Each structure stands twice: as C-alpha cells, then as structure tokens.
Length: 443
Image (cartoon, rainbow, N blue to C red):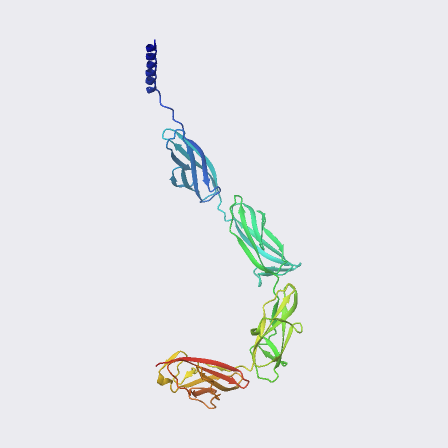
C-alpha cells in the first residue's frame, strides 16, 4: 500500500510538471503615466520650456517616449524629458506624450497657456509740483529737478502693454508699496528737504514684471545769491567807498582798505532767513553772518590776493550755491616763462645738461613783471649756498631781455652733478615770488 501511494504521488508530480510546461504566458501590463511636470510654471511667448514625464511599468519593462504639441517647436528629447519652444504668440497649446514598453502604449496630455511677453511698459506722462492755486512747476522747465517745499508732488503715467497689469509696485523715498493695476497717478506732499525718487514697476496677472522706471528730484529749492554787476556784467564791490569790479588790483595803501559789497537773493520757496559771507576761503571755511542783511563789510585789507563769497540760507538750513569776487591788493611780481625763456646765457631750460666749461662762469638771466609796476630787487642762491645780496634789476635794456630783468654772474665754482638755482623777485611792498631752475653739470 505504501509503495502504491508513493507511485501515485510521483505521478501527480509528473502530471503537474507536464501541465506547467504547456501553460499560457503571463499578461503584459500597460505602462502608466504618473505625472507631467512643466517649467517654468508661467509660460511667456517664445519661452524655452522643459517638460518631464514621470511614468512606470508594473512589469519593469524598458519604456520609450514620444512627444507632440499643437504649436511651437520640439527642440530636443532625452529619455522622459523634452524641450519645447513656445510659439511667439499668446495661444492655448496642448502637449502630448506617449509611453510604450514595445507591446502596449499609454498616452497623456496637458493644456498650457502661452502668455504675452511682459514689457508691461510704464511711461511717465507728466510730473508736476503744485503749490497754491495758480503756481505749477513742471518737469522739463528750467529747474525740473527741484520742487518747492510745501507743494504737492504729482506724477502720472501710461501703460504700453497688451498684457493686463495686475498691480503697480512703487518706491517713494525708500518706502515700497503697491497700487491697483488701474492706477495711473501718484501724489505726495513735498514736506522734506533733499533728494527724492519715485520708482514704478508694473506686475502682470501671472507675476511677470516690466522694466522699472524712476524719476529723481529734490524737495525745497536752494536759495540763490548773486553779486550786483556793472554794465559789463562784472561782479562789483567797494573799496573805501570806490566801486571796483571782480579781478581788479588795488594799489598798496597804508592802513589797508574797507571792503564792502551787497548781493541779491531769491528763493522760489520764499523761505530765506539770512545770508552769510566767507572772506578769503584759503584760510578756512567758517562762514560769518551778514552785517547788514544782504551786505557785507571786511576791514583792514592789506597786501594780498583775496576773495569774498556770499550765500543765503533758508528755514530748512539749506544753503544755496555761493557767488563771489576776487581782487588783489599790491599783486606780487610774476616771472614770465615764455618771452624770452628764463634760464642761463646759453638759454637752456630747467632740466638741461651742461658741460663743466659752459657752467663756469655761468650767467643767469630772468625777468619778471609786476602788475603794480613796483618790482624792486632780485635775490638768488645756488643749492644750499647763502642767499646772494639783493640785485637791483637792470635800469637799462639788456640785449635779448626786457626791462626789469636780472643779469648776474654766479660767484660760485659750479662742480659736476645736479644743481638748483632759486631766484626771488620782490616789490616795494615786500611781496615776493620764487622760481627754480634745475640743471646737471657733466664731469
């Protein structure tokens, strides 16, 4: 019985094996498209778009992809991704994808909207500052960059775009905010002194932004100050009660001069509260208040070169540009470099090289001019030697040189090397000017 049972079991096994060999193949599963991802999310005209397909196959088969679109151009494909060039028009498009394992195919599609390219251009129409009822300052006038303190700043603009403007982003004096898309103007009070800026940028319905436009200006006009002028347009001042003009030279005078001048001032804001002057700015930058409203006085002005400047100040402590005059009291002598050349009897100029024979003896020839006609003496020195005794300019003409020239023979034996001659011209008032000539003597 046991043997029979074992045989029967063996037969069953054999039968089962025989039945496996003749069974039908397992069914193939159709691939599945899980998702499509598109970048960028908002597609503008002529954008390059990346579409990536995520697909799976239950059997683990290799998948192959095919793509199509109702418009635009297919640029390239790589596995489950393709690059698509959107059309250059605003249009709705359908993108298709097919996935196959070689025996079965799955398909999917998605609709996309190609939006208008976003210039969303804003253009300023007019920019005004309105002060009171009948005074308007407009951009493009003589002073378009400054508006009166206390006025109302108003800017208008237009939109040049097919796309709808969803909102307008603005920046006003460092503060950022937003206006509705239909806004076409902005107003604010000019309650400040100094620079300001209004910047605008249109934002579309899909987040696209146009170029930023801006307008810069200044709040609160600077006061403007001007010296009184003569018929030739020269700025005027008074020296001991005598009217003089910018650039004049006053003769040397014991006790000096009392300098006085008056100016005119204007401020479109009408807020001038005072005036200041600065005398001889070479000595510093300390402005002094005016002595008599728009007039200034400076006393005891003796020999020298001078300048006096004036400016006005408003109630916001803004000062306007300065205006001024320059004048001279007993001008210093001036060396003349061109006609004839200053230098030696051989006529070299600074920087020349001389032989030892040419340099011994050496005559120096200089000439100077004194606008006051008071040139008196010269002094000269070689290198570190002591100053020579004063030399009176030649009273008569020197060949090749004008009057008031220096012609002297150096009393030094000049050796080889680099040398410097320094000459000083002095006038009767003791004002002086120095000039140097450097040269090289060969061994």
